[in-house]
Length: 437
Image (cartoon, rainbow, N blue to C red; front, side, top):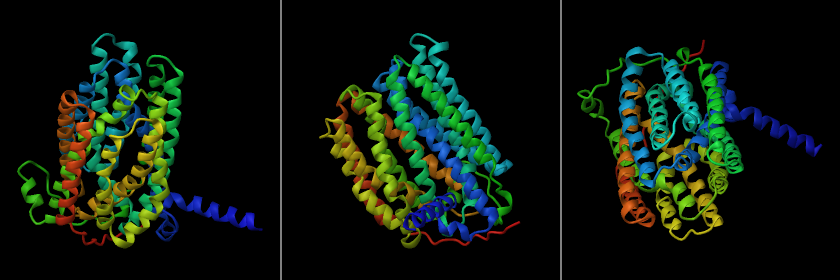
């Protein structure tokens, strides 16, 4: 009897997971279907993206790239992202069809760039191989960012505000599981083959998983779920001051996010390179250390989602921001794989809380009738800051080495945390009228 009880409990938990837990069962069936498709979109997207995020730098490094080129790739990608975000917001406002923009831009064109990465070593030779691979990686990021403002609008329409913490906790949980499995598998496959063959295999897998994500997103039915409020202002350079005027909460959040991401990317692009070139870890070991981050994050996601809904995301974000500057300092003393694993277990827990609460805080701070414009402005600030951070990191690592990057990143993270705590307030939740059909 006791076994059957636990079997039923696990079965109910698993069936509720795609709608954000028990809360999701209380919403209209139409909304539940959307939540399920978005959940599966996240599952496949995470499986695909974790291959790219964890191994693209190592792949391009195996093609002959230098540390400077890896940093430059991150910087160029961020500058292009800022430009594409702006055009993406204009596109989303002027033609609508947000779901279609996401599927065509990030879903198809962006993922075709992943497929092209498979064939780069076959079709090209010599010094040009590195630059062509960098170009496809940058273009993938660019088209993903072109889709971002429209994606944010779809997210805002699809998920009722009162359950976003619990839903994203559930969605991020399965994304973490999927990312962990593919990271381990990809690292093992890469080490089984010589030269770039293993990397080509896992890039092909990332392409296929990405298509599954695009199909799931395409199945969303968004238009009837939200009653749109007010008229949309068209985004332009001249319109930006007017858009920001009267929204000090959003401005403070955007500026502190810019400083925070600048700090993160001073060292961010170089951790995998450091492990391979200085600590002499294999791709499989690099994958294992990244899995430690994901696994520890999974243990806290559901709890963090509920706390975020009850207490508000700002307070939880401050706690995580106080602890995150410790992470780069810990890397100074790391020499063995188990050192990195311990750091990543600690970091994964904190970053899981930060990522969930920061996204919800940003979404709750955006005027609900201007989601594409404001989400684009926020992300443009983030990507420009990432670009500047990568540029500074590239210059510092060439001249002073990796440890100086770690100290610089930690110091700026502390400054960003202090400013965030002083300037950013908990936003007042707006009521969105959800209608069913």
